[in-house]
Image 1: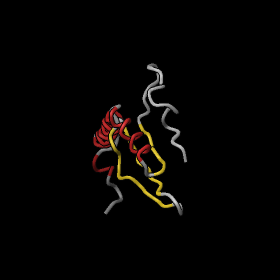
Image 2: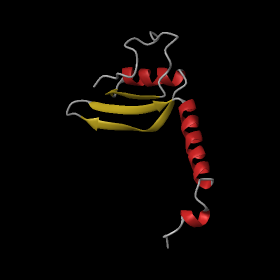
Image 3: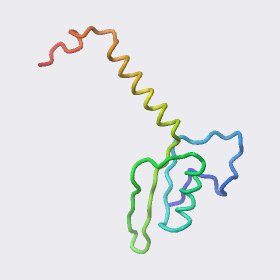
Image 4: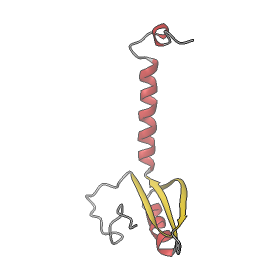
Length: 101
């Protein structure tokens, strides 16, 4: 399965294109796959989760997710804001737990 998250030729994305926050690389477990992941790391992406691997009968196929650190920070901030909203929400503490043992 080809990687559709990256340009066909490395470095061909125009400067005006915004980087995707999330990319999933898939392919045969070979040097080319490692070079694609390495290039994304050099562009500022970080590994997200463990790699996955499977065997299709003749080749090991791998997958690796990568994200931009700013996407992680943005998601963390959104979660923190949601928790703050719950803490200071429209319900008082007594109402929030009404009906719970």
